[in-house]
Image (cartoon, chains in turn green, blue):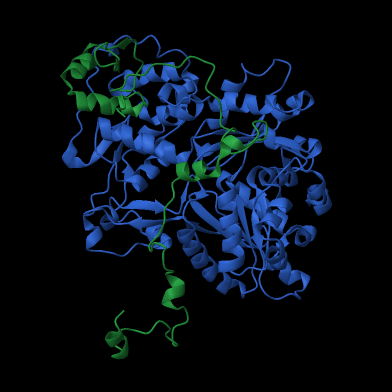
Length: 124
Length: 471
């Protein structure tokens, strides 16, 4: 800062005696203000679980493993039992009326329906 | 009343049994010389492991102060105008009034792990201030943690408790052991307290744990987690309703209400699907939920309760409705008048809780609850298996779905060897189960010696807490 500016006391001094918490303590230099949200994925990555011994239980490996049983098929549109799959869109459907609806859907909607059961095509 | 089991929570034992672990937190305030009565009164029990923070002061009889762990945000469009975030109590006391429609809630934690210590400290200190004022500033507190909390989150919590909030001592234990403790004390003659082991199924807000408990300690190599809980179910219901009738993607609170009131667990899914297929009166599951319109009613409600309750007597009629042939052609779902602000639910009512039992059907590559329990039991010593299967305790808010225990039994029976008995105990008040166990433990005489004091924390840092509580 220029000397003239400092001398003219136009800026606030660094230390304000009446403040219980000084600004410099509250917002240290070099650290971003505002709140830091960390998502669970980020935290998990930071924990570096790969380096842990595999026989020691921790957050990652207590997860329930994939099921041993075959899954049932439900219609993506109505939620009823779905004996059929549309080969073009991969949507499961219950009967012919739903099939008509499926064929009239634009691709964007099809993907959204598939996303309901995590089957959407994800482009990376 | 709970003497036999309390003594096993002795500190010496805590230190001996290094394989187990436990997590709640416990803190105590200033005054070093407190007489015993005051000490009992001044334990602040706090359950942070759910949508709602449950706080109480000391003994079991106290009614806990329940406050939600979230703040309300106005909808995105209005956010610029009203900058105010609703605090938790306001949110839930008036949460169904019209101007709060499509508020999103923002939680302090992601999957119950603290993701932002800043906001957590905000909500904690608010609550402490309120409760401490009531408790005459000598209160202590107790926080329950999810199993296998992340080390960084634990460190953050230690720091928060001792440095930001300035408590004097801290105790951490995990929820399954506390549920076990409570159940054992309630029925001193029961199997749970005689065998001193049980299998606690905690089906909570953000995930489900199946945890074997032995001698009041959670057997940590036996814990299995299913990444599904009340929140995921609400979201799924929200998606289903939005795709099929009215867009309710922003109405989390309303859909929570719908889930609690209308969802139930089906005992036989294919059969129920066939019933739900039908039109008119023979469809026992169809019911209507009316959304709030902000003028005549500010709360959403179920249009016809008798209609909604019909599924309960569907089971005793046997196969009589299976021979119905009419339905299959009239698949067109009833047109819903959007102006009337209501939507029908049929198969969504049981397909949503179904997710817990068969996640694979709905696109999650995880084993269902029954398989999860079997795996948790199988990872323990074979001698324990019969006892564990006979003492399954259900706790957590998601177990409140009607017919939950029956369905779990039906699912478990084929997976468990024939010569073992399966017995599932439901807790009376599953949402408060963990908290009750915690307050029980807090009122035990040797509780004092089990916690880490602030002096110890300052000397050894967070590692001290880790060692003491076996994280």
